[in-house]
Structures are given as C-alpha cells and as structure tokens.
Image (cartoon, rainbow, N blue to C red; front, side, top):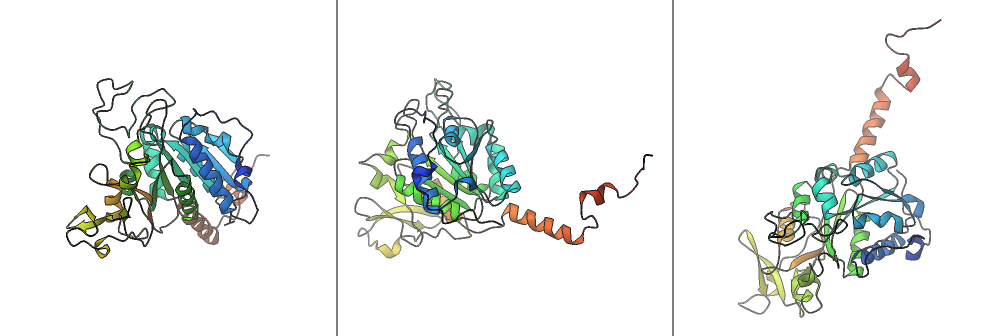
Length: 341
C-alpha cells in the first residue's frame, strides 16, 4: 500500500487553513490543533494524503482549520465515515476528531467497534467532561455528582473512563495527554500515526465556558508534578518535583511509594512497557486517579495486531486468484441469463 509519509518539506504553517478559528478564547482546542499541525509537519505527511473526519461538537470544527482533506459528518458517526475513507483508500493518513459526548454517547457503538476492528487510523478524543456546543449538559465522562444544566441536583450516573473502555474493546494503542502540554501532545500524535492500527489519543481538554478548570488538579502549575505520571517506555514510573515518588506493584494492586522511605529504592519502581501484550498493567495505569494516585499520561499502550484493511485486501487478492469471475461482465452473464431480441 502507498506510504503517505514522503519527504515534502512542509512546516506546521502549511497545515493551517484559511478559515477563521472560531473556538472560545482560551479553549484547549487551540493547543490540540497546534500540536497536530506540528506532528504532521514532522511526519512529512503530504497535505493531499491526510484526511480529518469529525462528528458534531466544538472539536468537530477541526477539519475546517486543517489545510488537508476533511469531512464534517453527523453526530457520533465520524468513525463510520472514516472507516469508509480508509477502506476505499488505505494509503491515506486518516484522523478522527471527536468529543466525549460525540464518541461515548450517541457514537458509543461506533467507538468500541472501530477500536475492535483495528483499522489503521487515529482517533483524537477531546475529553472536557461536558457538552460544550449545546451549552453545558453533563456527558458520559462527567464525574458523579457534578452539577450541570441537565443535572441541577448532581448527576447520578457513573462516568466512563475512556481508556478503560478502549482496552476492554481490545485497543492496541492508547495514550492520554493534557491540552496544556503541546510538546507531549505532539510526541503522542507522532507515535499514534506511526502505530499500524487504530490509535486512540485522549486529550484532557478544558472548556473555559461550561466546565472551566475541570482538569486543574492535573494540569495546574503547582500541582502537576505530583499529580501527573508522565510515562516513557523503558523508564521507571517516577513523578513528583524531585522524581522521588514512584509506582510499584503490591500484590495485585498498585501503590505510590517514595524513594528513600521504608527501604524503597528505584529498583522497586515499575518500568513502563508500552509493548506488553498483556494489558493488565496498562488497564491498572488507566484507572489510576486522584487523590490516591497521579494520573498517567503519555503513551500507555502500543502493541501490534492484525489491521482490518490489510486483512480485507488480502482476502480480496486471494479471491481474485481462485474466483471464476475475473470481471463484473463475467458475473453478469453467468448462470441463467436471457437474451432480448
């Protein structure tokens, strides 16, 4: 299949469209847009080989702001349209842009199945834990008890953890990153595109109007060192301002420990392995939450698996070798046919 990454000498500015960006001032979406444009330039992806497909929501304006091909589709159906794009032209770099409401509510069925099928695409999930475009209703990721316009007494629903849902659906690539770290976002986007299969990138994104500071405990200047665990493959799971805190396994559970206390050394700290076929530890990392644990960010899981469109095209080639029909004309004139005089 054609490789969509060629040495074309583009910069991030080359991926900026001529459309006025119409997100609220201070919205986290600006940082995501910037990171994606930087990633595409670093990957040397030709503009005509990139396609952005979105559903409905604030994040779904994304295709307008990219100087590439794009589809602004209908609510919850971006993954279905993107699947058609990728199957029709496997050489394209296909990016799905969706919010937590778009992908996990009305689009929940498509979300789990696009992961299960493992097409070679990238799904960027903007998670601000609110419906922003429709003015502040609770979403499938809103925390239990949160007061919104549609839950004035506090929502009584338990939220989805996107990474937990993804790994349960068989995700081979899952990453999480806050919108406040453009450098890390860019690195994650590059890793996602290089992965052969469905790459899910969850963005902890801030909605300044309807859910401001929802991720402040994770992203705040004074708290982020203690509340973020930035994972790197092959490196110990250390965090904190002095990198003295770490994660180790205790029985069947994770625990936070401090190097130098109670005989703990760096040898006790878990080493991150993104390529582990066994998803148990990845699942445990995804579920870590404040205040007991830091929130894991970076690439959490990156493993190989059968890719849908590659398997599909292999089947087609095999059928060509054995089928008695070599063209549509052969099919149309086979069997019981009638000649009209």
